Length: 418
Ligand code: AMP
Ligand code: MG
Image (cartoon, rainbow, N blue to C red; front, side):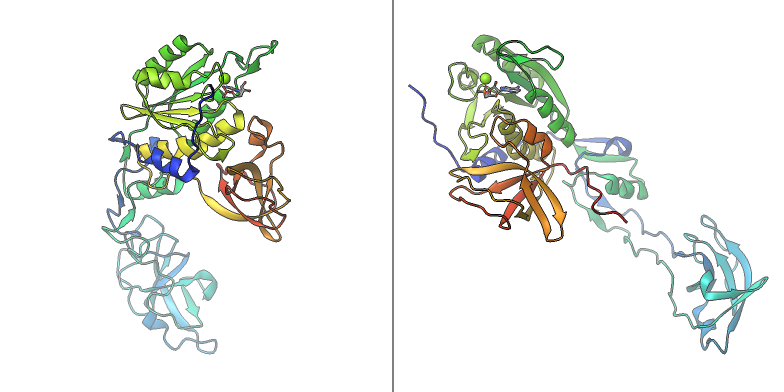
């Protein structure tokens, strides 16, 4: 008799997974290696930025009060007493009607409190005149205006990206404390599966889920260990999974979680003594997505259907792994957009439609990425987001506002160029 499974709502499934996240401790690594890792310490300003008052332009550093009364009819003269390039400091204080030639980034000389840009002067050999008065502080970049000494700038749990690296370097964080990363095992189950370099054979297909999941992990910067493919053989599959669990922090399997005669994952969870958190989610695709835990380790049982596999990873494995890595924002970024075409199918379960978002004259629009069944592979490649249509809805029309989840946006069209 076919086992009856009770579907749980997507949000409940996500929260069950997130409730079982265990972090893996921290490690100190070099800044150079830290891109994509999660901060396990806040970035605190170790000094002011800028560390000294400096010039934001190429020009002349003056005492503002010497420019009082300057106008087109009454140009005020200054004598140039030296030059300060970035990295140098002025040797003497600036006196009445004196000025230093100063370059962008150079420290303001003593006594000076304003910078006159070259364009604002008429220059002669060792002097210049100005035609307007300057305020104290005008054209000066002040010590600490960007960051004050001791200020906590970036919180623990934040992803380190290019901008974060700039900040780490600014403050001399040659080493940075980050959360340890899980090593994730990947196993694709299915007797029908061939390798990418194999020729097609009767009844067989190439394993696309394994490489896809690896790529999804790579996008998160999560290390993985591949266990290749396993045929639908209960004992053999159990053996590989038991070994993988010894060697990794979490395991992602694809296929074999449904109720078919050769879907062995439910029996394997039972044999291993894993606790199944859920084995049916009220979503399409991927309603058979199963998540189990064994001794603090996740077993993500993703559907073999490519679109379902992809979606199951993004909805459940992604936030769990990012959270294990210490991220405080592990969920897919979410936006609202206008549907670019009708979507008439009813949605008895929450539906995730592979789709393409783009900016149009009317704002952000989103259109399904083509063939959109759970076994589709082409629309995963074409899509750059997932439209989310809540369960119990039907008949979406062009122009309706829908939710969309962004998937790794590394590319952009030429619609916007300077
Ligand atoms: P399953 O979840 O094992 O019932 O598989 C569902 C469907 O996905 C079947 O049509 C399988 O042939 C297909 N499938 C399973 N595993 C993979 C895989 N690794 N790559 C591509 N398709 C797969
Ligand atoms: Mg199968």
